[in-house]
Image 1 (cartoon, rainbow, N blue to C red):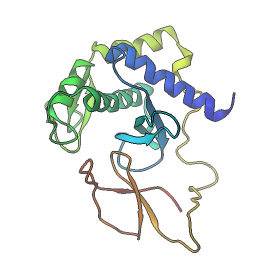
Image 2: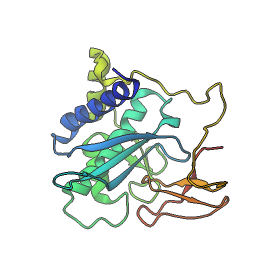
Image 3: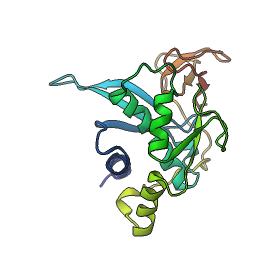
Image 4: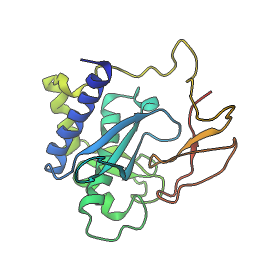
Length: 216
């Protein structure tokens, strides 16, 4: 099996596992991808892909930041589920959600065993633009993760771990056009833009500031 197929099959199997355990298989198929950037652990972007042939199906995307996947495994698993909660609201939400981290989203998070908190600590705000969470001891997510750990279910473990700083220096980025010196930027929901260095821009979709993509 190729490196790409092996790694992303495990990632897809993990998505399917938490869909069964935490979301009652109510989430649709979703493209789960990896990026390297700064300033976030994960992001959800609705309807970012479309099937080329056939029913023109629109597909949502969840992005995990490979640069922060050297954390404890349980933590980046919880990031995946945090973004899956956004996907649930996108596909099953019954109220108008004002903002990316709405009250409806916060209810879903608590239902699956993740406590929203803008500080990542008890007592933090449950809604707002910049949000994180902490894991509720003994909650549904905690139990689902422990099941993987205690039964050593290898199909849900990524065969390749991220290496924060490789021996050959920074990324080499190919860009279209001759002599291009534009800088890449990415926001919380995964949108990407190119522009001159030192731009200060924000995303209209998620309201977050764009961060510079690690590149040379």
